[in-house]
View 1 (cartoon, rainbow, N blue to C red):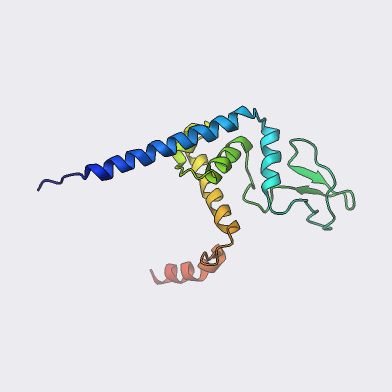
View 2 (cartoon, helix red, strand yellow):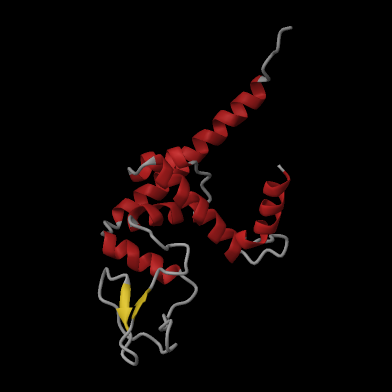
Length: 167
């Protein structure tokens, strides 16, 4: 049996891939022109979080000032340290530049894979996949789409335990 490829479908796909690559190149050119340091990238990411201005997680007072590049702030009222990225999708983020690159590209309409982000940001593919997974989740959660349902992993426990006992 001989399968013939549809040349119009192949050419459309090539055109879409080329358009995506051109979009990536233009967005990265604009990004690199800013010459952002890791501290600048972290500040930009923190400004994108929905809970700015930040509040102390203990006494709920507003945190006054943040040192450049700092991921934590000390509360003036209770003298406890509050980590700014805890409880957000940036929890445990070590490379703010890679996260900001992913943010800029995804909000620019680029379709990315973990391998492509790994090449662009010069990070490990597993890290790039993790960044994309968390970023896509954060974008979906922030979209306000009523058709998207988020299920906590704790709700899977009874099903997993039941299945484990039966097998």
